[in-house]
Length: 246
Length: 368
Ligand SMILES: Nc1ncnc2c1ncn2[C@@H]1O[C@H](COP(=O)(O)OP(=O)(O)OP(=O)(O)O)[C@@H](O)[C@H]1O
Ligand SMILES: [Mg+2]
Image (cartoon, rainbow over all chains, first blue to last red; front, side):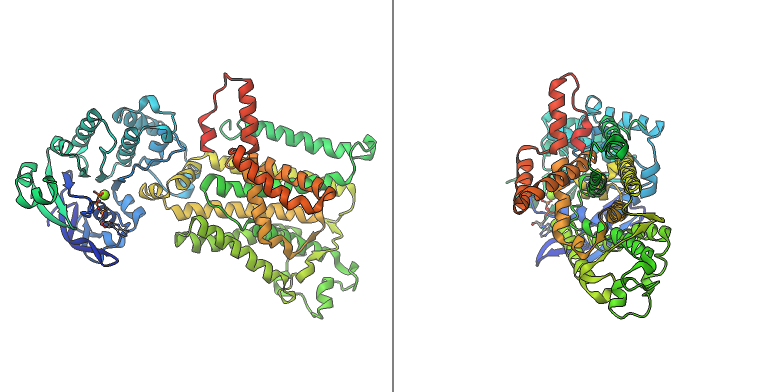
């Protein structure tokens, strides 16, 4: 498909005979905001594992900007290409401070020598402040990330994603553990950053998905069941049966 | 600089300085021998252990790599120095051969094996004391970290590594003196090893090496690289997805740590006068872990303190009730894990903190 940022075609992956991803095809355009929903075990997280090089698919094509074969890249390479990932279980560096977590995520050289001799530049300090404000953690700047609440960790991780300035953000269940107000604020934040970055969000919270107001892909048993606006997929009889009507 | 020499480090270095100046003076004839002369070499040996503990803390405390094979790097450094000291003996050996060490004459060897060449030079030996452990760590780490071996599996293969080396060094054909190892040293840099001045010099060199090792380790810990290492320890996956090549970082810190352990071994051997394959024994490597845990893992200074305290306890107890030592060590370890989770240093600082409640614990504490 022309102009795609991420292109998956005919991708399959089995775990001990169980087909977690089954002939999956998906296209994400630059700057696009996309929600992915589906019942537990539908393969949403596995799809992200495949895109980021954590899991190798058994078959199928995964292309970055139509040219780079992501099935041959590992996690570090996909990160360096410009794919950022938020895990389903929040993953921050617990014994570093909030600001230090953001510092490590900031775009920049990643080599051993560069980090041994590098110092935090004024520009980097300013960028850290901007991100702290964006994810509303200014007060927690010097607190240990491990002492944050579940929701704050989620935001810190989103902040770390933004610090990487990736072209594609894969965001796995960001609203888990958040209050309603925090959930809405997260949706708003993701909408703000879409456009400059493509964002793929996995979420079970339908209010949240509605607030995103974007194209929705429904996964079921490792394949795409329906795709379109939320209203469109919600009207799909199969989707109602396997997911919404539970 | 303030980031590197924090209060804890400043106090330790000051204490080390006082010890380094005070002990030789106290045990010199001029001071009427306030302390027995053998104390200089004994404490010098403790300082080498302390440096070894700092080396382990660098990989374990900072990066979460629990190496149970650091004794091997220490022993390799020791052997490199031992080989030099053997060659310094020259024709003064029992068999009087100008080139071959006694054990080679005994084995009827006609010439020096190729890997003994060059060791007549002190500087070459000093270089090898760092290069041999560094290279071993690099090759070992390259395979282990690239295949993402970590946790208990990594600990087990490091034990296997030191065990395999022990068996190899026990063999006479290896050319390192077999069972007996290397001993009967006479002099270092032309100085008589039994002379008080030489012993004082070695003691001071050990103190200097410990201070240097602590500062290098602290410099690494305080750099951004140090924070990447913490990220790898806390959330390896996260570090990888942030784009950091985890295996390169592990390899770097593992090799630096091995070199440090090698230096400690090289300073240890001339002070104790012998190196044998027993230094490779798996139990030795486990004991290093106990020193670090006891002193306070991740604090560097605590690791050094832990090594010295345990070594002191060992000296006292083995003189007094030798058969109890292993039980005491095990018991100490259990007590510390149960009651002092942050080690002796953590407990000390908590105690002082309670006296001065205004000073809140810095965030650094928890990181370490
Ligand atoms: N490494 C693995 N080994 C074996 N099975 C796996 C592995 N990873 C995923 N699976 C299986 O693949 C299926 C899809 O899992 P996945 O985590 O992708 O689902 P999901 O859509 O993210 O579900 P949830 O909404 O619960 O997060 C599940 O049945 C899971 O048990
Ligand atoms: Mg999932």
